[in-house]
Length: 400
Ligand SMILES: Nc1nc2c(c(=O)[nH]1)N[C@H]1C(S)=C(S)[C@@H](COP(=O)(O)OP(=O)(O)OC[C@H]3O[C@@H](n4cnc5c(N)ncnc54)[C@H](O)[C@@H]3O)O[C@H]1N2
Ligand code: MOO
Image (spheres, protein in one colour):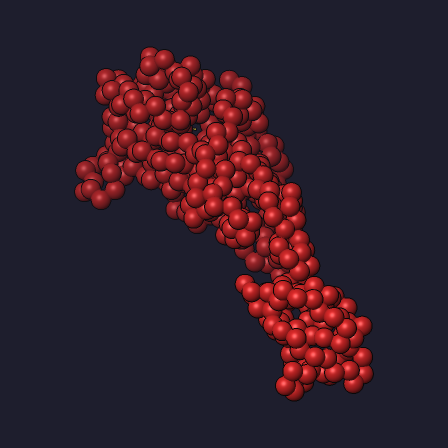
């Protein structure tokens, strides 16, 4: 049976992503959200020519050898000097205060000798020095943060400086999770023989939380058609934007998820994707809900979520596509098969900078090696294997 290339599956998924929906959130809640409209400056910053130092505002041409100027007033932050600095005059000024009319330069107080209302300077005036010109930081109409940016604390600060009390960000999807499998029990229980602790929904919820308005974990459904149907109906009743199942995606008699999703009206593709780990993947839609059926093997579930669901969520939020990293190998990779390999690897510091150290483990049930990984090296189909130092593509596991 021929396997679907990774790109083809991703393209098919992305074709179902709805347009970004804008919502406005207070600045205090905006960090980590994806900006949906350019943040454009509506005022000049600084709004006036401002002093960068505590000192004296002067006309630079007045400050020559032995010149003594008359101090005619004070300009403080929040309370500027309303007059004009004329020839032979200076204004005492503080950091952030408006530079008064007539003055073009500020000389810091360490270079001034004050005597009553007179001041002279021990250093020459440099015209324009220590003056932050109006609009020097940003000017009206300037795009400060582009739509599609995931907001950092620095960008929240510039948005506040630009007088924005709220920001237009992308509405985040509501995500529902359902694990399937008779053998599964929740963490914290005593294990009976044949039981396995359900880990997928926990890993997925943690992975997807930064993208989601809400994640509802619908728990575990047994491999029973009636039970599975009612659990899926309950999950759909909430009208989630995205429903993710894990397990039951393969070809065994107990792999019922596909049938039941179809019974429930999901228009579903069942793909066998040319990748490892993570060959079986279901994708479909029901009304406005996108449905992902991930394989049950824990490494396959997390890797398919990284390769398909994270890009889908970035697109959902209008976030500019994340570029894979390019990193040198810290040790060689073995030859690949015909399937693209998302190879576990550590990020290590080599004498030449960061490098990818491949992890040999490839079992799709081996969770501890995935937990030790920082990266998934994306090894092309049929790759002959690469030597130490070869530059390879890698997905940083913890990146947005
Ligand atoms: N004859 C074939 N068998 C299998 C094929 C195949 O092509 N032909 N594909 C294999 C591949 S590849 C994968 S991946 C798995 C996918 O199987 P399912 O999606 O049906 O997953 P299950 O059988 O339900 O579970 C597999 C494995 O993972 C454990 N599991 C399931 N859910 C969880 C969970 N929530 N938390 C932790 N662990 C979970 C489960 O106990 C099994 O050990 O099929 C292969 N077989
Ligand atoms: O999806 Mo599977 O990982 O190749 O065991």
